[in-house]
Image 1 (cartoon, rainbow over the protein chains, first blue to last red):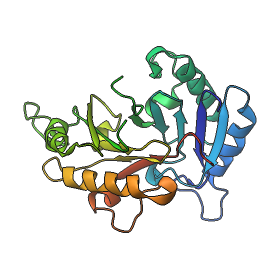
Image 2 (cartoon, rainbow over the protein chains, first blue to last red):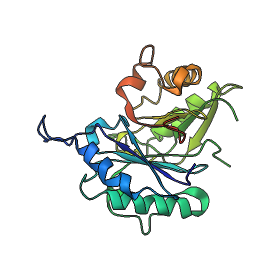
Image 3 (cartoon, chains in turn green, blue):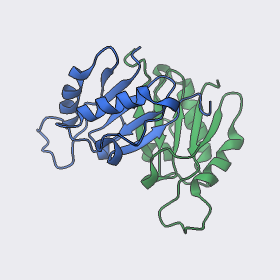
Length: 120
Length: 120
């Protein structure tokens, strides 16, 4: 298992998008998937349940906190997710630091969930 | 580790609550903690990041999907969380079934996140 995984909802629409427009979530997933590598897994998912505030992605790491982000820009958020994943994987305490966190992952925070081992 | 964990944010306020009112999240946590047992862990957490739509709780199980719920009634949601945890722990495929899911965990869904092993 790679050290950190980005899940991207492929079903999300943005409010205001035409019914026959490409799904914004699918666009974001297509931008994120090429960023995968030995240190980063990118997994498309059909629904992350954040339907009213998509596009949506989550970042998770073994033994760490999990983060859900919404209102992402499908064309531009992929590098922010990659950087957030890097920050989380490198973080002591397995919490994504606020300092240095890309702006879309500050204003777009939907929820964060502790690891099952919490409190350690 | 117990088979399923409920995390309850103790910091959440409900919009409209007075500044000096007890924290709704702390009330919910106090109601949920006595429900813990050999099959259920209940963990208070200082912030689950769902600050605009609290009170907030998450349900997580090893190897399964994780669920975040918001807009919970602090006085009444604890048994719904207990039942949701039971459903998730018992679920094939580690997805919480919609049928039988308590109403607060239907209308209150904030997000759901796959296990790191997804897709299996």
